[in-house]
Amino acid sequence: MRKNVPAIGARGFTLLEMLVVIAIILVLLMIMVPSFASWRDRAFYVKCMSNVRQLALGCILFAGDHDGQLPYPNWNGPGEYTWAPGWAYDRNKAFSGDLNDLTYGAVWPFIKDFTVYRCPTDPREKLPPDACAALKLSDYVMNGAVIGYNGGLSFRSYPLSMFKGGDVLFWEGAADQFTAGNDCSQFPNEGMEFRHRGGGMVACFDAHGEWMSSSDYYRLAFSSSGRNRFWCEP
Image 1 (spheres, helix red, strand yellow):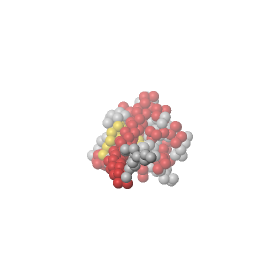
Image 2 (image 1 turned 45 degrees about the horizontal axis):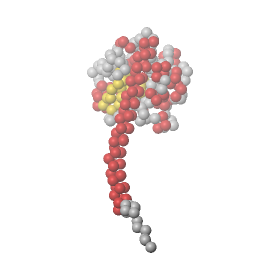
Image 3 (image 1 turned 45 degrees about the vertical axis):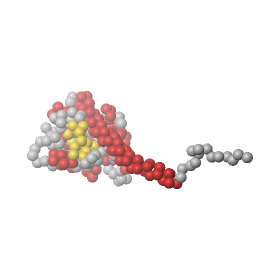
Image 4 (image 1 turned 30 degrees about the horizontal axis):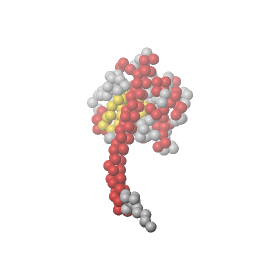
């Protein structure tokens, strides 16, 4: 009687062969994981840049509908309660930190996307429960130069035409400066978050966006030599 002979190539992997395959896979993963992280960081970078540009463009479109006047920057003060909606919210209607507050802001009709107001590396879910309302609404702040930093315009914003295109309109505000008395607008030297490769995003009055290094930010924001791109009050 003929015995059954195993077919050629039908044997399974040996333990050594399996270990070799696993080792190869692990090496490949070690090579690829940094690439995945780099792609993810690049996607965050691009999204954040897009966000600040859209906010700046929203201000330009608002100005186009209001005789060139920029939106109020939500700068804490008497005018906030009586003059007009701020770029981010309208204190006369709502300021609780609920996302719907944004729908009352001056630029919302041109944005209509809650994700535009936050850097993707800093989702709302990441915020502490006691975060103030302003920080819950936006990671970005408007330059207080728009109203002259408490200046003599009775809290009315300057016209867009009075700023240079390369002046900074928005930046990623320092999280520790978002307080009840320092809302969605700040002095330039109140800080910036450097979430992206040691720098942060800014958008200018002509709606172009830039990555700014921490060293360039500190050089400009803490300058005492007069007008520059941050200290740009007309």
